[in-house]
Length: 173
Ligand code: HEC
Image (cartoon, rainbow, N blue to C red; front, side):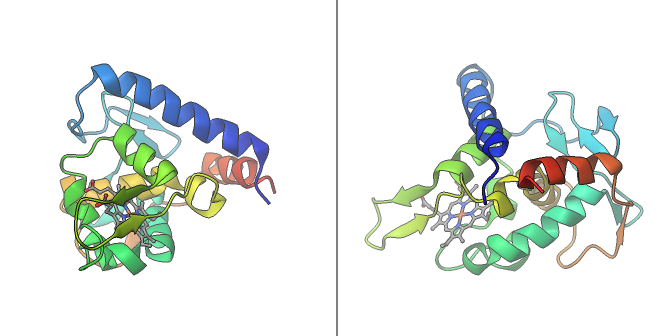
């Protein structure tokens, strides 16, 4: 079951960010943390970012690691390293900003120019992806911009209260 609030949220997110992306840069900025909202971290642009200190990641980055490997790695390879079918997202996020990332994941994309037809499916109505899209983003951002090593992060911050609330609201549970 898809919670209606989630659809509205995703729609607003994508529209809002696409609108701002028209004027803003389209490469991710400095990933340094400017703000900590109950264990969810944001950079100076207000874009979600990761925390990776002394081998420990924030909860969202850890959650993103799990969600990525549940939904994306079949095509994009383990640890965001890519495959013969789909690009290495650990490198894509060196140049792809948050708005474009959201737009591709929500809307999908089809490569029609190559002889091989590679399809990025649309996940816009999939709560198991869209409810965790910031998590997946910060995980891949940590791989692209934060020297996060391959594999399951061994240490993580504890799960924030606000994560559980947002998760329940989004999934409609
Ligand atoms: C069925 C295979 C498949 C799955 C599953 C998949 N993707 Fe993709 N994805 C692709 C292909 C193929 C492309 C390249 C499309 C193109 O060339 O236009 C792509 C492109 C992308 C891009 C653009 C990359 C760039 O360098 O411009 C992003 C971002 C992306 N995928 C994110 C995700 C995320 C996040 C998930 C998991 C929620 C995911 N994908 C799951 C096949 C897949």
